[in-house]
Length: 492
Image (cartoon, rainbow, N blue to C red):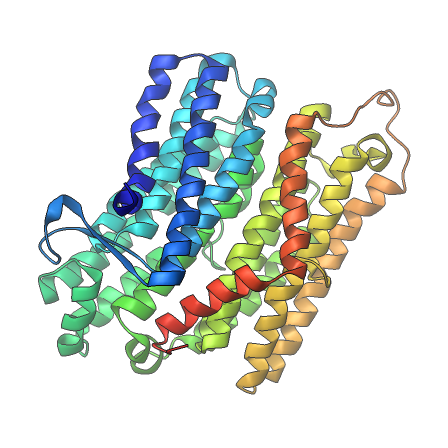
């Protein structure tokens, strides 16, 4: 069975999704989804251990050798993403049964869990496969289920948000498919490893340049890089709370993974950063994204909107590390993938608890919640400190390595701007703290109680992870460093 771990990561949630309809009882379906998600989490831990100890795992589907057959190739980068998706997916799902009781009608519960499992199936497939057309197939599975999950939100604006995401996501997926088609036209193969070898002979042709451009733009639409981010704020703000917590921690991370995989593995470092020197463009877009999104967050009155714009800013930090294109810079990006997943899942899950108790996440409704929901609001504060990058939180760790990477290559202005961007986060986090802790509860709402333990347990598991991995960085740094060195061809 251990030999089949790579395929089980995808097959188990895929098979469980239709099983939900046979159970068709809210609590039973939730237990099934939770057990499946917990299985994938344990599976991803085993895969990570195996990769770190024995090297890349290659799994050939149906016994067909690549490039004729499809292979799953799990290295340090894949294993890290699998761990992020499965662990966050499991912790967030623990609170799902409580949350959707308030936010979704009962006849949609089974649909919710089925779509949730399909969404993680798609993400696992994108991350695991070594075939570029398989990437597109799983991207569609993940995206279509995400559109439907967002549309389940009880606010009518959720439908418009899902429609915006559908249009932008479809454009992005079309660009990716066109790029894949061009690569196949030039090489006759879809296997990533085989593509990397064959592209070396034709990488100076206009078709390959065009394929690279289509793929990069399509992926940047998916990861919400400024100015291609317009779909994200409403999608996060009006989706059900559990959906927001899950997608904010995973969806953009998978897109960043694709950007890294195409740039480093398929096209190669020399082509991506020398033949087509896009690093300056990515640096500018990353920095502008940080300041534009953080400034927008300061003026928002919906707390979900605030943290949605914050997510766009955090993507900017990841892109800066990628654009520096050194081993340390890429390591900072991968660290921030892991750390940002912990921050945002904790913050959006805490907002889900607030929504459960008071039915709103408008900033004006947070008055006095620091005293009425002390544990929930303490989680928001710790998550906010992590976003800022305060020492002893995970946010500090990844931003520190990003500053080190910038200084190593003499990009002092970039380092200064990264620090200034972090200060903007202080402003919008302080707005929440001020109204929650320094203003009295709204009249007629003095009886608000703390969130139920089914919310508090996963929230604080994620909050404690924010602190633990901010102090003990051995796991995250070791895996990120190994993945970065592997992509750069550096032997540790």
